[in-house]
Amino acid sequence: MSARPCLVLPLLALCLCAAPQLAGATPGTAAVAASPVEAFKTAFLDAYWRQNPDMAVAMGNYRYADRLPAPDAVARKADLAFCDRWLRQLKAVDVPSLSAQDRIDLALIRNELEGNRWALTTFRSFEWNPTQYNVAGGFDLLLSTEYAPLETRLRTVAKRLKGVPAYYAAAKASLGKPTLEHTAMAIAQSRGAEGVFGPDFIQKVEGSKLSPVEKKALLAAALQAQRAIAGYRAFLQGLESRLKTGGARPFRVGKELYEQQFTYAIQGDCNGEQLYRRALVDKEKLLVKMDELATQLWPAYFGAEPAPADRLERIGRMIGKLSAKHVAADQFMTEIRRQLPILERWVTEHNLVELDPTRPLEVRETPAYSRGIGGASFDGPGPYNPSAKGFYNVDPIEGTPEQKESFLREYNDYTLQVLNIHEAIPGHYVQFLHANKSPSLVKAVFVNGAMAEGWAVYAERMMLESGYGGNSPEMWLMYSKWNLRVVCNTILDYGVHVQGMTEAEARQLLVREAFQEETEFKEKWHRVQVSSVQLSSYYAGYSAIRELREDVKARRKDRFDLKAFHEELLGYGGAPVRFLRELMLP
Ligand code: ZN
Ligand code: ZN
Image 1 (cartoon, rainbow, N blue to C red):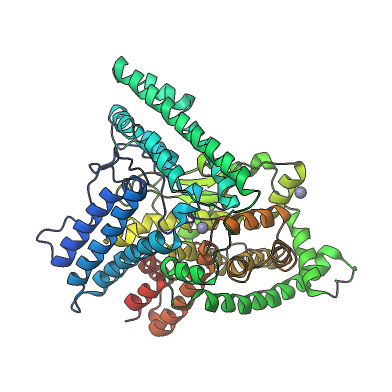
Image 2 (spheres, rainbow, N blue to C red):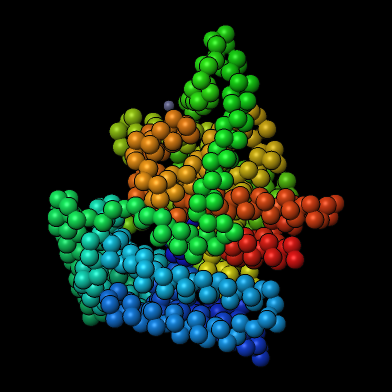
């Protein structure tokens, strides 16, 4: 249920046709006679892409795609110098006379630089998170995005491949004492990473117009890359067995790091502890509402049987009953694909937000190298290549028959619709359509995670408010369970990382008090061990957007138009809601 759990979203893109822009063109910065602040933004972004070629590729900018810098101490020193240099330059252009739009752009750049600085000097996950070393995504994008002829792309891949052995050597040297949880996940993902250079890749190379000599060199380099990845896995396996006997870093980040990370990642109007307290209040409000719905529905489903006296049991049994309505495992993807046009029609007919039928959306299995977080996710095209395809990734349903059943009960006929709203329409997919039209490239690039997740969660509720689901108590109850999940993500995240919540306590929270299926609990418990703050971004953004909408409504009164509000909100790209408030309620 994520648009990728990191500060900046790495985006996968695949283009159907030749992209109208030249690779590396920078839409939105083409203005003639640029003002000092425009010139600064353009120069900064170009320098930023040079410094972070992988992220550039993810954004659809291929200018530096042939580079694969080794993530070693020298590179980190250069990154730090980069942050300091640009923070100094930023001070010079940050003058009081700037427009609100420009001020926000600069604030986003400053947050990015200060956040990176903090990550390099304080958070230091390069020492303890082996999943951050993974070359697969970048190569996969270059191979699958048709931004240039295949031969051009393969030559870029060939140059880049030369860096892989040094890349993993640097990774090994950088890791000190990782957490066991990140180590296990990196081991699993490395198998998927090797697959990027498997049979499909070989076929692509063989079928290309490269010369026989080039083909031979490319395949040899790919084999060497696979060996480097396998070597990294062997290294991690060795490390894992040593760490199991002691010395692993605890996965809980603790209060200090948590609050600091929260500041940079959420960019909201409160700190982690305040959000946690808000979540506790909202949890109780939701339970009251859910109890009303469960009580109302009870006789229709249980006849004369008296409802349990215990509130949680009452709600839980009603939800359990409704969860039995679900598709078969082999119909899951088919059902998702079936529902998307229905959602499209609803959104258009109810005037909720503008869609763009020319921008393709593909439902696919999550690529193996990026599985292990979330269950479902959306990969949108980057702002430099906005006409590329968006991917709705679904993890394959695996496990024992009991596990599959548990998963399908969680994603039942009611909540699967909410998932589709969240990931696709009018959630993440629609958000990308609009963000990529943002006149500000900076806002489209430095997407705030809380805004991204907040919009998708807000979209769920907004759809139900528009009457989607027929206003049935069943749909509202199941939606409320889903919304309670968002609220509990925050309680879990803060509880685990700051308050030392145990697995048993987490199970009590999610299974007993939030009615989650066992598979969902397991997935969440894993996720909270390999991420911090990200789980709170959903609720942070959602509550901020709802509050903003109500305030805008109150201000605009009769002039308030829901569709216009949505488009205004999405038109600012991924700027944090706090800044959108400044723009929309001056
Ligand atoms: Zn999401
Ligand atoms: Zn069943």
